[in-house]
Image 1 (cartoon, rainbow, N blue to C red):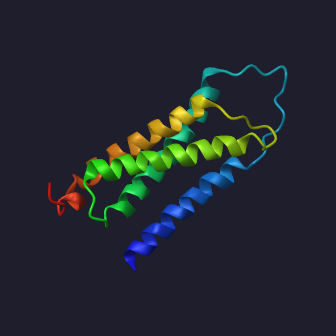
Image 2 (spheres, rainbow, N blue to C red):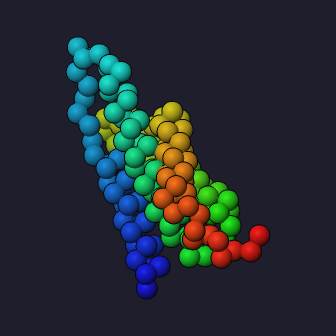
Length: 131
């Protein structure tokens, strides 16, 4: 039952990412020049959202008899596939654009989330797997 709750939590986080990327942005003011803060804030959000997604995905996968590296690779695959789908989805949202640069930060966020999971749990949940 606890494993199903972790699965639902991961799906809920995916839904949150999808819903947040569905918000249409107003047309940019032609007089406004993007500053470094605009770029940094946008990438920070990608790192945070996909970092948490990776953390939750790895936490869910910890209940299966997988080695940590295998679970981490599956987690990166989830971040890559969902990030690519989300970038494609943003092509159809007014005021949004798809970017490989954003996809790269989605994957980096996934890697950061894996690192945070490893630091948080010190690989304790994957010790039951024979090497």
